[in-house]
Length: 300
Image (cartoon, rainbow, N blue to C red; front, side, top):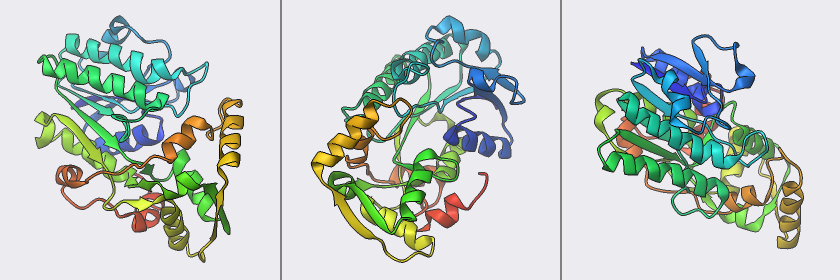
């Protein structure tokens, strides 16, 4: 099939694109203006500005499937989160109904349905609009909601690997105690490829998680062990210092640590992997094997 992958230069979108090409599909790389001209077989998509269906229709000629893998951790002037997560995807979905796209695949997030962060609420709004279009018979879709996506090239993965190298682990207590279920980016890419095969007709929301949930503190300890390091000392950061550090991050654009990030990391992020496992046809990578099977593995 001919597939438009929005966010093809990103961590998740890049892995999805490589997996689709390996499976024999033709990928049209949707890239941001700063990557214009640097990627073969690409089209420029500006998620900060392309907020109308008319902006998208010319890019959908002869496209069979559209995949949205665009996301930002926090809002900025250049990439406002309401546009990137909500208004532009909604415009894209509406354009897809006019262009008779066979399938839309939305990469959302596991906490989108219940989260109270700006990240979650904007993802949720786009997800719900897509569901409404499907319920009215205007589009076929699948929404993938991954937990923490782990692999080489991911900013959060790099952060976790850096933390795993430290002899002392200092994080807010709620973050250390939160349960997560990290998923290999390669498994996530497998799921997208599967949705373009016999599972093309499958609709709905699928939680994409690793084989087993784990406390954040134990996850980082496991990464440390996988790298051959001795156990680190865990020093919970007092609540007052946690709040202060996050608020300081709020004042510095582009810094990943902020109140929004702390809230997300302190929230349990787990679910059954049964539907995900059925889609990819095997057990997802366990968190205790992510370094060998996601971080040290190139390509998809």
